[in-house]
Image 1 (cartoon, rainbow, N blue to C red):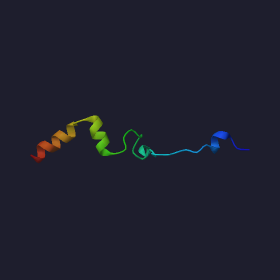
Image 2 (spheres, rainbow, N blue to C red):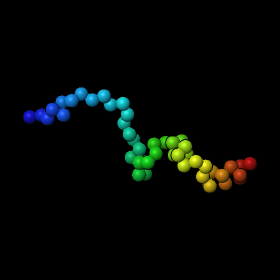
Image 3 (cartoon, rainbow, N blue to C red):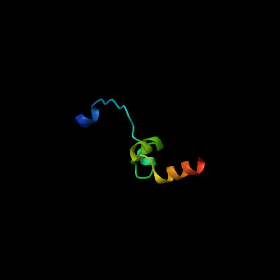
Image 4 (cartoon, rainbow, N blue to C red):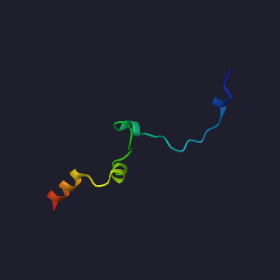
Length: 50
């Protein structure tokens, strides 16, 4: 006996893979930078490079 819901056809567009990185908040480093903005360590690295 199969539930009606199990027979329902689904259209999957995206598989979330964030669980691979820490606690799963961001998927990519770029996504994290876009959310967090400029960080202290980035500023220090830029000053040392300049």
